Every structure is written in C-alpha cells, then in structure tokens.
Image (tube, rainbow, N blue to C red; front, side):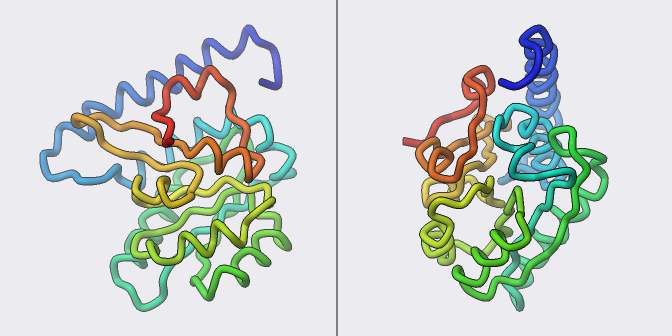
Length: 197
C-alpha cells in the first residue's frame, strides 16, 4: 500500500469501525433488502483509500459515472439516490470527485466514454442486469473500478458490490475482475471482504 505502513492500522480500523457502525443502522430495519445508497457511498469513499491504483487513474479529481437505464423508474431512483449520497461526501479515497449520471446507450459507447473521460469509478444503478456482461467485455483492459447497486452484479463481472449477511453489511469483490481492471486493494482490506469465486 502507498504511504507509511504505520498509518494503515488506524485507517483500516476506521473502515472496520464504519462497517461495524453500519450493522446497527442496517439491521435495525427488518424491511431492508439491500444496502442503502448513503451507506454504499460511505463505504466506497473509505475503500478507495486502499486501492493502490486509484490515485493514478483518477488524477486530481476522481470522475464517477453513475450509469442509469433511461425510462426505468427503478433504475432512475437508484441512480438519483447514489448521486445524492455521493454529493454529501467531500472526498472519495482522499480525492475530490465529480459525479455524472450517464444514460446507458450500449456497452461500447460507455466504454469509450469511460476511457476518453478517464472515469475512475463506474456505478451501475438498478435494472441493468442484462447490460453487465457486455459492459464487462467492453471494459477489458480498462483501468476502472466498477460496482453495482446489487451484490448480484459482482458474480456477473462488476468488481465490487455490497450485500447484507445476517443483517450486517458486507463488501463483495470479484478478485479476478479487479485484476483485469487494474483495481488493486491491499491485502489488509481484502480480509474484510467476501471474495466471489
């Protein structure tokens, strides 16, 4: 991990504290079936501290694309919730960020825009299940963190997702896809994740 190793433990403790504190928030509601966007955004902001390739792919400002399926109320609600949640977070992984909602217009067009505008993070909103495989194929070799509104997206090729396990928030990672997309989390933080195999 970049930086002084003596700073890893306090930062890792901070991420662990966030996960622990979220347990009460999420498990307190019996109706919750997914991690709320506000908690996903908070976890993302902390997690990117541990991604060794994040700063180099971001530059001075991390560009976050929030991909939405136009005409789908579920997708638009999911995208708007994430954009609102991110707007309340000052920095992601220590960097200022710019969040842009992108209507999905095909995998090739999205991949081209990600590369040309140097998006560091791509969040797929709800109701994009059928788009995941083409997006993953189009992003082959791209340096970008992809994550989705649903943990099920990870099994299909998104790098990160968040799920509830016994009422507790859990980070899920597709480690093979992370390597393909130049996402390099430290082993310290990988211990806190469920690795999709």
